[in-house]
Amino acid sequence: MTMIQTNLETVRARVTAACLAAGRTPGDVALLAVSKTFDAPAVEEAHAAGQTAFGENYIQEAVQKISQLRHLPLQWHCIGPIQSNKTRLVAENFDWVHTVDRLKIAQRLSEQRPPGLPPLQVCIQVNVDGGDTKSGVEPQEALALAQQVAALPHLRLRGIMSIPEPAPDFVASCAVFMKARALFDALNAAGLALDTLSMGMSADLEAAIHAGSTMVRVGSAIFGGRPRPA
Ligand SMILES: *Cc1c(COP(=O)(O)O)cnc(C)c1O
Image (cartoon, rainbow, N blue to C red; front, top):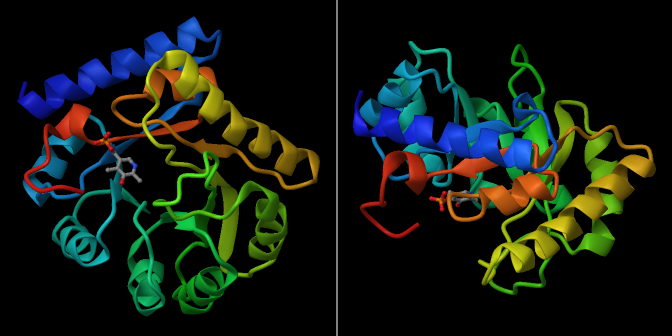
């Protein structure tokens, strides 16, 4: 086994243990392998160990990797900020987008989704901890945006995504993730049929799973330290 494959097994074991500790079914939490800054052979290694869903932050880098790996049945998730001038590349190349935080971006993604591809699967990014360095819609604006996005023809709204600032410990981390969970429940109570709560990374996936995450986005714990900051 390669280092990536060993790491993948370790992360899967962490996800399973966190689910069991939280009284949840392990199969209910999906693992997104965040391959930003790592090259196509690293993705191939992870795929050889059974990983099919990959997350990327930088559109240009991702598009190149996606085209190099066309021969594999992979699912690509955009988890980085999206400028208006990049929506076409995203709409044409990705299966999912986690970082929709304004209507204009969603409208462009819908208009630019090529006919013949399935709807783009979308999460709305929410700023749950008031961190001012992060993008994301404020929680009180999430319902209105979610309703507008859900009405767009070539998108399918799946849920919400959050990237809280690192918290000092498990309890503090859970408290922040619970805000996202509460919003997720409120949106569903308002009639949106959401099934995806995208939260939790290498350092805090246990807390995210405890709070109800259905998709953890894990990079460094699988691929190792990144060669450049991200
Ligand atoms: C880089 C990144 C991750 C993965 O972070 P790690 O700490 O390496 O697991 C997850 N989500 C987003 C949005 C990221 O940018």
